Amino acid sequence: MSIILLIITICVCYFIFNNYGHGILSKFSETYRQKIEEREYRCASLCKEIFSSIEEIDLFLKPSNSFLDLNESQKILEKHKFLYNQLYFGNYDDIKKTKDYAIFTAAKSFFINKYNDFPRLVSAHNESIYKKQLADAYKIVGNVEGSKLDEQQMMCILKEVNSHLVIAGAGTGKTTTIVGKIKFFNSA
Image (cartoon, rainbow, N blue to C red; front, side, top):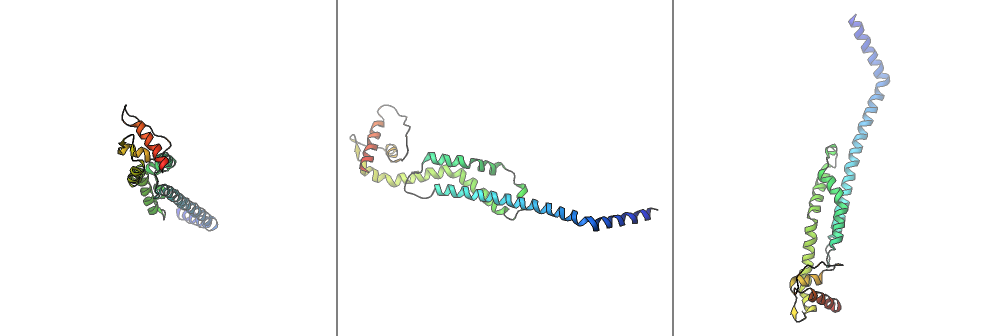
């Protein structure tokens, strides 16, 4: 009796598989293929976003002969802060098997390092511009109110910013610096 039951079960399974099984397998393989495509798309989208952010940061840091605006540099950091947090704290186990995962990890690491190093790069650029312009500025400004300005005063004169916050005691040269800046603008 059990052999007959086994044979009937096998026949029923064979019948079901031949008539309906290919649809089940194809539906399973279609779902699997869609998940793979979604992972590939997510990885490619992240890479595209990272490369776009790196390009924007590099464009801002592009060598020039003028100071980089500190307010603009803060705006760039704020603009890319969400991506930085997403990459730094995010979990990307779901895209590990994608074909571009190695590119993603390299781009992620490069972006995080560039983002962290950005304020230092801006400061280094501005410092280098300052040093290049210092000698010429001393020639233009000369003595102000009978004395030569120190480096901090000259930096205030050279910086191209909308405002300066000066905190200093009496007799430290605040007014002299302002006079020097006016002299620099009139001469330049």
